[in-house]
Amino acid sequence: MIELAKVSTTISAPVAAVFDYVTNMENYGEWFPGVVAIKSGNNLPHARVGKTYLETLQLPGGEHELSIDVVQSEALSLFLTQGDLEGILPQMTMRFSEEQEGVCTFDLQYHSRNSSLSEESEIITALRKDLVERAAVALVNLKNKF
Image (cartoon, rainbow, N blue to C red; front, top):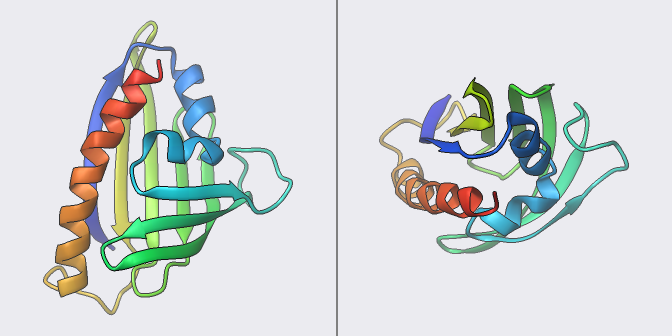
């Protein structure tokens, strides 16, 4: 996998509150820039493996629609999704920890699962620059939710 972005912050809220908010991916557009729309794709509960979402995302070059699947979820510690965006095959990993009571450390990472791309691919270079900037803004937006 190719890392596209990796950011981290602390949020003045209990891990449970942050986990519940961000693992409800219908909230993703409220804090992550460029998410035009996102909705549930099935009736499973949020944060459950097998839950799907349908997302419209603004990327350089225009809007793209993709399906997102929750592939791993460990209560209050890990949430991992994979998308079917052609050419990129994105993966998002969120990690949560509480080193002091009422303060959540939140780590957010994005990867490309497309094994035919290289670190130097033009699409990877452009996407990495874009995602790093968006992820930094996203963390500020997320902190402001709490």
